[in-house]
Length: 251
Image (cartoon, rainbow, N blue to C red; front, top):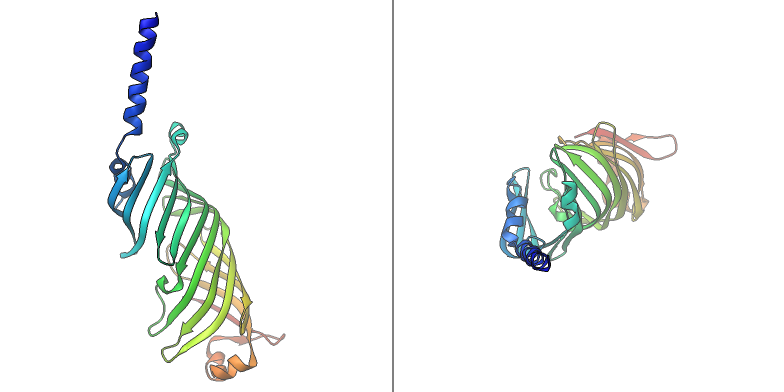
């Protein structure tokens, strides 16, 4: 009996050793098989690994994430929903959080912190540039087959600046509470934190693309004069009885 016990113990120890030593390239393959994520310089094990450089493709454009590391939760495999703590690091650009992949292409993200330069934002009109730092905390996010099921978090834009093709304008800082609409779009309840623009309202962003804007605001007198608001504001905004301006548009 004791001999069988020691043989079983040896086999179990060997299996544990083999599993623990599974190369990180296996984990890299699982993460990159859909083609959206690319990894180079993979090292470590499938449980605790890193890639010296990672990039992600969004709408046909590649974005560098810098160094990526992950720690896989072993017990999550028993639930058929592998979870890992992930983090990326690049100059002025950091991402960290816990990601889980479930059945039927279900993806969840929790306790995620994201900080990126505002200049990475795409789809702006010609000759328009923005600057500053965008930071977000995603308490929970749930996607299934490109459909947004749930979202809770917040986002801010600090040291916000805009270049209108002629010069840079200081806008201050803005923030928004994030949630999901019944139709699966991202709803941002936006408001200003500081600066020459007192703004509040809603911005809705369907995952299929486009933006629906419904906000009202006021401009400080000096900023209004500086940007010659009287020339262009009547073309995009509607005056309200309380002295504020309203913008309702779909892009």
